[in-house]
Length: 84
Image (cartoon, rainbow, N blue to C red; front, side, top):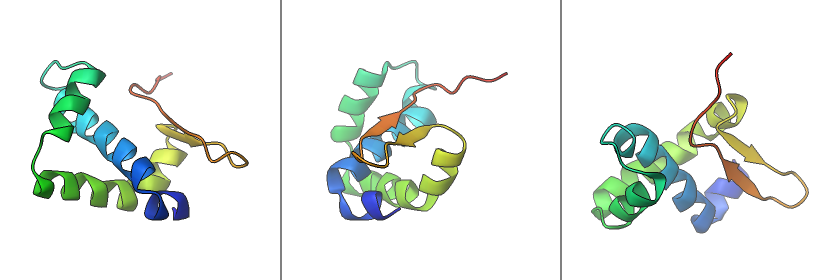
């Protein structure tokens, strides 16, 4: 939570992945296409997904969508979560 709250690059990366999960994937976009669409979106759209990234981070980590290496603080985002 502290990492995403204090690092705008990480927050934007997670926000873009949430945008892909909610919008891009449903519109048949690739991750790269969705990221471009997110970057070109309005500030209000970006603010919605930045806020969502902060509020959902614990759930995303618990469910395996986001992995954060404790020592290096590297963030890995899964675009698809495997189900068993």
